[in-house]
Length: 218
Length: 309
Ligand code: SF4
Ligand code: SF4
Image (cartoon, rainbow over all chains, first blue to last red; front, top):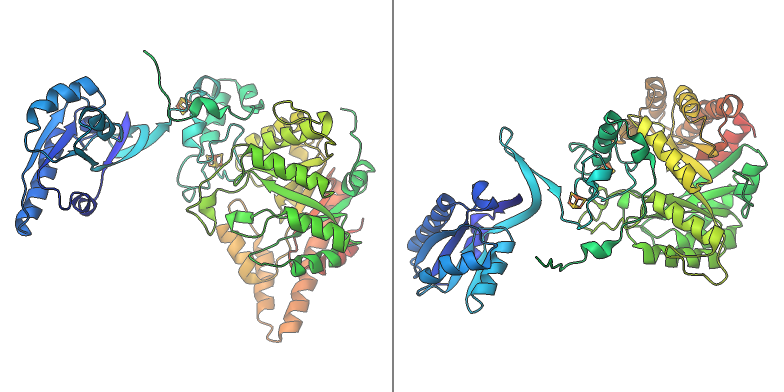
C-alpha cells in the first residue's frame, strides 16, 4: 500500500493560515488502514485545528469527513459534493494522489494536504515500521532478482549490485542499519539455487518506462 | 581470452608480467592543481601510473578528468582516471569519456561511487544511471567497437583500458567475487583492491580469486599517524588494522620532536608495508600493488626499495 505520514501540526496550521472554512477529508484506503487518514484521525485533526483557532480567536468553521478512496474521482464527487457548502478549502489526509484527485473534481477550491507520502510499501505491525518496497518503475524486475526490488530497496537503484558499500549485509546509506538490497537478492537467489541470475550482467535500464507522468488505459 | 592490445604503460607492464606499482592523487576542494602536479612529479619513475580520484567519499572536490590530463602533460605521469557513476547520467559519462580520449587518457577505473549521503553535500540527488559494470561495458563498446551504448558509431573512437575495484574485506566475500566474475565477463582488464593491512588477508583473497583472470593490484594504505589508523579502524567499514600496528603508532606518537616523529613513522611504515608488499610479490599471483600514499609520495620509493620490483 501507499505509505502516508501526517505532517507535523505546526506545518499544517501554517498551510491553512488565513483560510476560514475547511473540510478535513480522510481517506479509507491505504491512509485510513494505516490510521493516518481514517475518520478518527480526520476528526482529531479537525478538533486540533478548531482548538488552535479558538485560542487565537480566529474565525472559520472546521468540519471533517471521509471518502472511501480519495484516488477515485467518482467516489470523491459523490461523497463530497453534498458537503461542500461554505467550504473554502479541502485539507486531505490521503497520500499525494488524494489532493490531486480533489483538484480534478473541485478545480475552484483551495486544496491542501496534511500528509507526507513515502511511496509504496508494507508495515510490520509489531515493530510499527513502514518500509518502502516498490517505486512503481513500470518494468518489474522482481522475477529476476529473487523477489527483492533493487529499484526501491537499494538507495542507488543499482541493477548490478551490491556496490562496495555493503558490509555484513548492511547498506552504507543509513549508517549500516538497513539491509543491503543486493545482499538480500544474493541470499534469496543462493537459496533458490539461482546464483547465475545474481552473477549475470544487467544492461542499464530503459528509463522511458518510468518516465512520469504515466497514464495507463484500462 | 586473447590478450588485448596495450595502449598504456600500465597495461604494457601488466602484459609483460612485471609487478606493477600505481599511486594515488587526490584533487581536493581547491581551485588549482599545483599540489596534485607536485605530487605526480614525485611519483614519476617509481610508479607506472597514478589514480586520480573522482569526488571521493562524495566530498565536493575537483573532478578527476582535468588533473588526469595535467599530470600526464606536465608531470609526465600516466593517469588512471577514476570515474564514478554517482553524479552523471550515461550521456555525461559518455561525453566525459570522449573528452578523456581526446586528452590522451588511457586508463579508466570504473567505479559505482559512494552515495551522496556519505559526503559533505548529503542533500544531493544521486544519479547512478550506470553502475561500475555498465560503465565497464560502455568503455568496452567504445574501445572494441567504436560505438556508444546504443550502437551509434563514434568518429575516431578513443581506446581505453578499464579497471574495476574490489574489496578483499567484503563480508561476505562470495557476492564480491561473483561481482568480479561478472565484470571479468564484461571485459574488465585490471582490478585494484581496497586497502589490506595484513599479509594473510591479502593471501587468502588472492587465493579466493585465483580462477578469475583479471590482473589484480592489492591496495596498500600507509598510516601517517595513530589518529588516522584509529579512525580507519573504527569508522571505515570492513577495515581492521592489526593491534600491533596501532600500538607501534601509539608509541611513536609520544616522540615530541615533530620532524623526528615523522621520520620514525615513515620508517615504521616502510618496514611494515614494505615486507607485506614483498610477500605479496613473492607468494601471490597479484599483478602489483596500488599504494595510496596521498600527500606522502616520498614514501613510495622507500617502500618499493624494501619490497622489490
Ligand atoms: S522493479 Fe519496479 S515495479 Fe517491480 S517492485 Fe521494483 S519498483 Fe516496483
Ligand atoms: S550497499 Fe547495497 S543497498 Fe546500499 S547502495 Fe550499495 S548495493 Fe545498494
